[in-house]
Image (cartoon, rainbow over all chains, first blue to last red; front, side, top):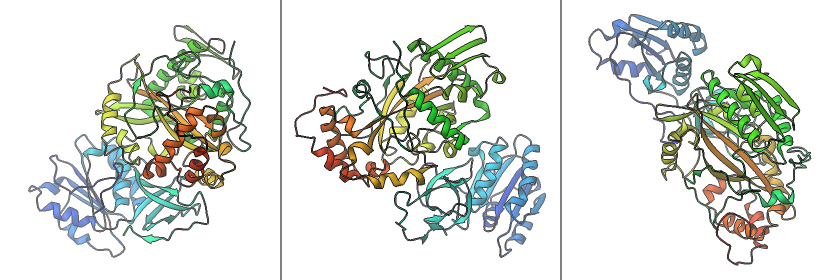
Length: 198
Length: 346
């Protein structure tokens, strides 16, 4: 679980079955376990109206656990980028009343929510559950480049190379935490880099 | 008699200065010898002649130079001006407000004539004479918010009001005290203030939001905020922090008076009539220590405020590195005598 922080830092809950006929689940890696755990409290026939989209981790685990739920549709994607066109179309064609559930890493939840916001879905109506890595998606405020899977504090921008303080300040629109140069006032000050987002 | 606009810069050679009249009208933000956050909001009504409140939208001797600096910032980074798609109407509201107020306060410099939706706007200091159709974006060279805020001093945030909250959904932000419109756009009132220390726990934002969501048309409100800036640099954005941050390490006991500037924001809040949004102009005033201490009361008071500021606030405002040098320099101008009540100089 993520530690308590400032107000703009997202807070995640626990997935729970919502009333409705159409349910879209998007999960990566250990997020599959959040869906499996929720299934126990779901009414009979719940997954008859569900689509599960899953991005397995590098170990390829949890696919069988999701297939056992017998969702109306099960789709595996190799990465979030590869999933984007399909997700955009699904949301564009969705009817009023579609329920959205996001589970897994912060990067996955954030990026899926970003696409949902663009499709006009209110962020407070989306169920989320964080599972797995605390690695962050970070936007460098200086060059605007996004660095994925940031685990250290400070972190080096993958684009401009500045050493960045990874803030808790988070933008849903960008789906990223803000990175700000940590030694802008004196570049010779190089604080030790610690692995803190695991 | 009109304003004599200064030719000056806010970057590179930093030729920005305040004239003696502008020093005396500086909106000094401390009414007592200490500072802590408060919801210091009051009605934005016209103040005394010669003060920055003589008109509700203040135009001063820095107007032309500030607009030139804004154009330079936007050329480098167009993301400093953004408006989400549902905010265009609020942009027209703002255009109307700023044209009306500037023409009202400074008829020798600005003229607005209206014939139904056909409007003519003359801005003499910037050499602009445009006729356009109010509400028709295709008749202006920019969107309405960008058009008028390229001609108005200060940053402007337009807030949409819905779900009992205010949402930062449009803005022109080129003279900011280290926050990013590009990052914060689309956030609600609590989210974009999230990084501010101490104030959430004091319930400040809850009360401020309650006040702001109840602002009525024709009854604007205002508050002052402050920080400090090294060199008279308007663009102290986080985007460029790696460029201006090193300035903070250049303060020495010898150059405090010239380099260290008090930066005061006159923030005002106005209900917009058509969109029901709120516009939040953040007007920035800069004054170097050498100019400020020509008023002995301000020198004594600023010394006490900076010396006693809680570390967390000093850190948030970015003063930590040069605070000792500044306090030492100011202490020589503080004989320990009492200061008179109120903001103004003696």
